[in-house]
Image (cartoon, rainbow, N blue to C red):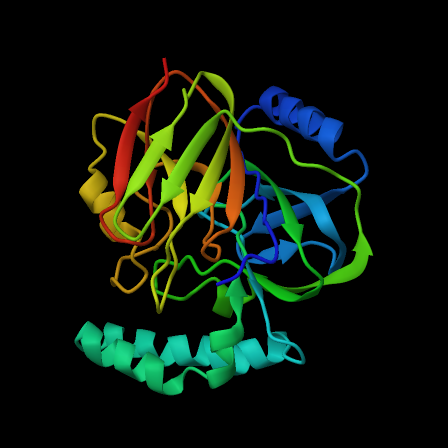
Amino acid sequence: MAVSVIIFALATSCKSDKKEQSLVDEIAKVNTNNIIEVVAKDFTFTVVDTILSGWFTFRMKNTGMMDHFLLLTKLPDSFTIDDYLRDVADAFGVAWEALKAIKPKEEAFGLLGTNIPEWYASAKAMGGAGLISGGETAINTLKLEPGYYVMECYVKTENGQFHTDLGMINPLIVSEEVTKNEPPESNVHISLTNDSLSVKGKIKAGSNIFAVHFNEQQPFGLGNDIHIVKVNDSTNLDEVSQWMDWSNITGLVSPGPDVFVGGIQEMPVGYIGYFKCILEPEDYAFIAETPLGRFKKFTVE
């Protein structure tokens, strides 16, 4: 796929007001007049419906008890959130009902393929905030081209309902008017393919900016993404990885098994995304929703 736009996503989370304010102040140095406030709660996004194109900042606070993320999908021309809810959400709903009925995954995914509309092949996942646990705040800076987008969170409740179905989906129009903001520099580079995760640079205590290079994507289904989860003595990363799979009955059922502090959603091949985290001295892991089983532990000293 030709590279027509570089998307930049800058994400972080922090628990204390002091850390949160330091992040806002730091981001404001780069994006002086372009901070978009987002409140994520169980189960809504509160946010404006129109923004400028180019570089801008989302500051998303998770005020709910559940884990949430923010995925942006650019729809083809003339399609809207109504088409998305009717055609795409319903298709995933049919597949999910089959999975809940203990049908084989191959059968459920076959139903998904049968019901998903042809126009959805032209939709593009354009990044967004990775998973953050309740009480955390994510700051995302993105460079988006003009068009019609939907933002959503498809984490699930204990009874298996997608947050999208409960109202956690909003339209977002990116206008033709362009900002003059610029992205910051990164200190860590992550390269993703369909079977590898490589990290270059030193991850330090405090502020880190991760540049994520999307070098390959699956031909169908979910794309490569990356999230950061805290690791403690009771963490089983194989179990966390299985939890990341929405097609498992207990997959993405919130609250999750451990604390998530940010990351970046999938983007097309050739795109570069960035996210930012303030990390305390402790153990963490990069972990992906896809491909399943991909994770890499690291320690911040």
